[in-house]
Image 1 (cartoon, rainbow, N blue to C red):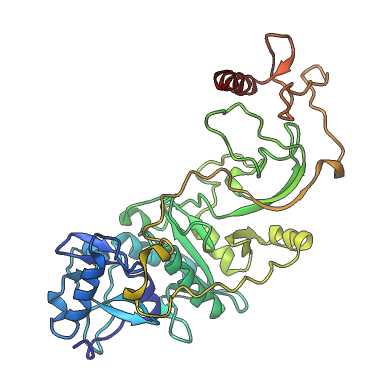
Image 2: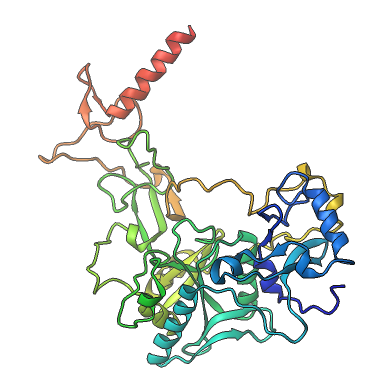
Amino acid sequence: MDGDLELDSDEELFRNPVHYEPAGINLDLDRADLGIPYGEALMAELLRMRKSVPVEQRGLICPDCRAARGRRVAMYLVERNGVWLASHYRKRGEKPISHESDEHLARKERVAADSEDHGFPATIDSSAAEGHARLDVRIDGAGDIVLGYEPQLSDQTVRGMRAREGFRRRSGIRSVWDFANPDHAGIGIVPYVRTPDLPASVIRVQKNPIQIRDGNFVLEEGHCSPSGALDRCPEIAYDPESPTASGYCGRWHRVLVPAHLSSGFTRPDDRAALTLTQFIVEAAAGERVPFQRDGQHGWLPVQQWQKYVEANGQAPEEKKRAPSVREGARRDRCTEDRPASDVRSEPKGRRGGRAIVLETRTKESVAPEVALDALGKPIPLCRFGCGGPASMPGPEGLPEHWSCRRKHDDAQTIAGEAA
């Protein structure tokens, strides 16, 4: 009964969520139980409907179309290598259904117009050569650079975003994924920038600057000490329960860190801030380069990129990932044997640090640094062995940190109770 329907493209199938109207809940097609009680029975019923019930009456609709346009767009299930995905309902020959918000459209129009104004041809909703990757905005840059601008304002799974980025990378396209949500799952998973969440009316006015808040990295290196070049150790997570604890390990690090978190960053005024227009134009000109390190993505100014390559070499080949689709019938898979999907994964914890460590040298390979007070006198180390210079004398007159003293006292109390 589904034979006369027009399938979404591979890329659209990866990203489509699906909503089940009778239960009023989104279904997780990455799981055999769909993420709901009695989901396996529901899956069996949905598969049975494929042969006898019209698509519009099966209860599956697109939540994005409903949220962005207030439209009820029916969906149906498509099998790919033993995995079920959701496709929009449209007859053969009909154009794909757009469920983009006005803010999404405004960003595409703004970037395309800005690129054209700076001499780089831009096309909205362009397809790559092999037809799999659809670019929100294709920008033909300097030399052989093809830039794909992808505003991403809705939630997407990590699996889907990696698949879409893979389509682009195999087509020789440099992607700029633009996120407005600072906690979006795609941050760092793909080459990205982060900009403010603005209304469409503001975005469309080209004289209004759209600031880059994240995604632009710089390379830093130096000693990890209070008097060193780094603001904080990239390998010690911040402890909110002990905010005064030492954040330094005494070693030497080379790191990639977001520009706004770097030691040399000074908050510019609005006129001097890096804008989305400037970033896109410089990326199209080859003056900003995407990088990937240990699965983390971002952008570097070309001078920083050259310094990175000189110090660390080209990024190693990305390891071939295991296929995200699983062979075999879904209903034969036990839920307990299946990994948690992106949709049902636990909420992301607060990040301990944003730096990407490139190299760390041990204490033995660098000359030790001694912290000095305002009079130039050495500051003694904390008596509790944290490795940092003390901040105060304790009750016994020995150098210590208040947080280290508290941890020591708590440990003594626990030991006493245990005894």
